Amino acid sequence: MFRLKDAPKELIEIETKKMLNDLSLENKSENYSTVLSGGMKRKLSIAIAFIGNSTTVILDEPTAGVDPFARRAIWDLILKYKSGRTIVLSTHHLDEADLLSDRLAIISSGELQCVGTTMSLKRKYGEGYNLIIELISIENDNPMPFAKLTEFLRKFMFDISIKEQHGNQITYVIIDDAEHTKIFPSMLAELDEKKTKYGIRNYGLANSSLEQVFLRVADEVKRPEDYERLSSWKKFQNHFKFYFKRLETNENEIQDEQIETNTILTGKNH
Image (cartoon, rainbow, N blue to C red; front, top):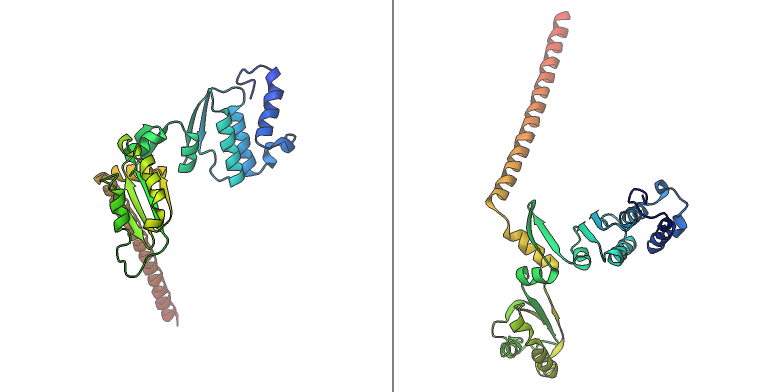
């Protein structure tokens, strides 16, 4: 492999030991690849892609079908060796894409939909920040426990909206832009001071997940032809089932005719 990549001979042993050590495969260095487990073979393939100072590496779902330990080892290897390289990686794991990528490209319905950094895509396609607040308890004589809390928050952000409310917990959505994020320090500081007043047990603030971004992008690109394509596939399936059902019926009719003919012939012989 080193010779194919025109790497200097003196680097062969050093790079090989380094890669085996990074992937915890030192004890398998004398074994043939055919005796390795599926996860070990996957790690070995990743090492071969990086070895020899490759400047461009293409990885097609490198962690598909491996156990969590091997998956973490592959992540660590990619993060360690990605400096100075161009890595094109495809994956169905959104947490993996979020962790490893500097720029993301989302494909839906077989077409490229958007490209950008994680933050830029979350800002453009995400729903915003989620402020989740949990109260200590809700009194029976207080049918609207969150009304005063919502009124307090709207003093800072008039356009804050309620996403959902379940029991003692409520989730607000805050627009993700500079105008709103600069208010966070003062709003959260005062919220801390008034936790007792509003009966707050705890709260958390989180940005949109990459999964939300993907689902929103995928939902936006649904077109009439997608449904027509699905409808055509259903028609094909129904036609296919009808054909075989008809074929089976014809075979049964032929068998019945043969049985009837044999019965008649037997009766004549007697």
